[in-house]
Length: 352
Image (cartoon, rainbow, N blue to C red):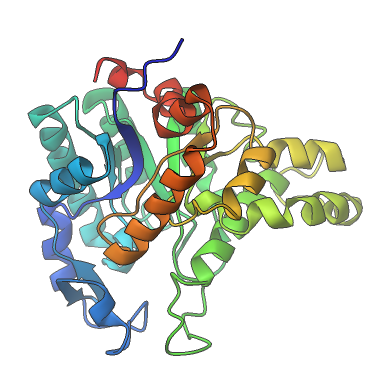
């Protein structure tokens, strides 16, 4: 018997810690995700910082959203561009201050708020990033750690060998890892009306996820529980294609930092891809959800909203679609998506 009165747990919910917000002010406008004038008005109350449209945010804005959509708890994270556009020397300080703010916010209302820690630039300051993981999880008791799909100017996705010390630290702590997409290495848009979040973000999520599996990063760090954003992006749709083709490639092109590992089979790759967790922010309509719930392992689909970065009409659209979809589910199935599956990762909210 399930209890359905408690609200949803939103695992994809952003905030702007003061140190991060102030750090973004110092960044010159860059050719990152720059929404054109005809697109930007769709996002209410934005400020352009470092070339990015950043919405106004406060805990009261999150609380109002929670009331409107039956959300009892949110887990905050810093969205793209994150630390990646802040100079490496500043990123250590800003990550620490932002995480301490997250802990203070959590402590102000632990039944309603949690946070995923951010880390300093892991390519430029790998050891500092590892130390921040330890401090955030061991001392601040963060609910997990947020990583971007890619860091730096090149294609260093999360399966790259330079990130192995991070995964070692995360695995040693049985950490929940929330992966948020960033822009591709080439930030140029195909069309001014198609900034990176519209199409590139789902592809970036898929790239990072497949890289983690093919590089053996996930299989060698089995204690990490990894959440992919936006219903896994394009991964559920492309997973069979990847699983069927990659084993043939691995026979002649082994992963660079696992040269002596036997090539994965199609079934092994598919099973590892299905082992991710998936938040359904901006991906909860009745076309996507049947595929996702069939693809993901039981217990691996989580509620998410993407407040406050996504345009509020888009959030309301997908949340409304979820409400409609859940009318066709049993109480047990509805509870699992809204709350139950998240409790498996974050049991401290069980009493909320």
